[in-house]
Length: 114
Image (cartoon, rainbow, N blue to C red; front, side, top):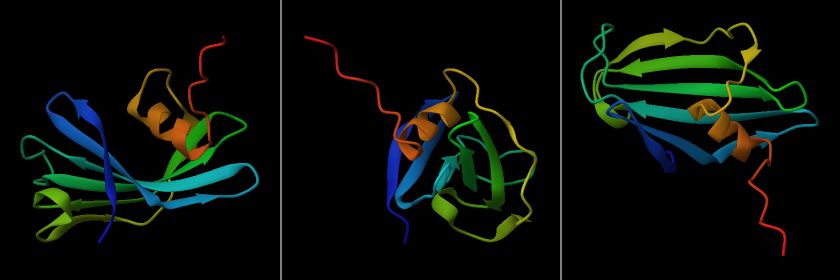
């Protein structure tokens, strides 16, 4: 069972990530994220898990695997099974992916100077 941590809502969908899956290497970090959709998607799924990899130095990311389920929180039949890495892409400023990158690459907001 994953230890999902709530990240936020985006257009009626709930986004979470699993802190326990974080693996940090020299320049890269990997972590799992989960999206619970408010409505069934065109692929007939209500939740999708994605294994993210970040290149912390180059501000890029890719999906190492993507799985979609007919129910929320990874329940029901697995309808999407894609264990193939995608191409690297830029992390967009202000995106959900950037919020996860901040945790994975240890880029927490700095405390205000006193």
